[in-house]
Image 1 (spheres, rainbow, N blue to C red):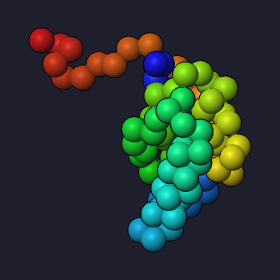
Image 2 (image 1 turned 120 degrees about the vertical axis):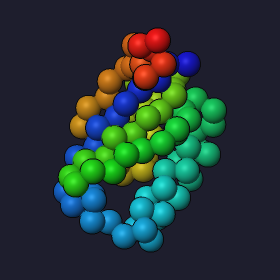
Image 3 (image 1 turned 135 degrees about the vertical axis):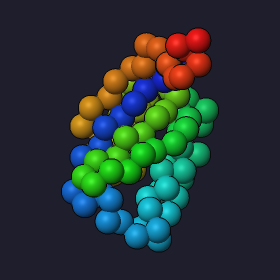
Image 4 (image 1 turned 135 degrees about the horizontal axis):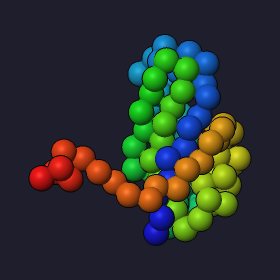
Length: 90
């Protein structure tokens, strides 16, 4: 399945408490369970005003459906074409 990076503009995301982040994660997981195996959330990175999420999904449409059902913004969805890291340089 393709991998996607979702950019979510969430003002003051970096100031969310651990409890608020837990609630967001629980909501996401609830929606994912209802959608079945079409969408898999790998992880998210929280910055000051954005959250960057990494998903594996059948399609961009499925990523959008997850966002809509969860009430999450999906300001930009980018399909990953390659993954590189320090080992790539060797």
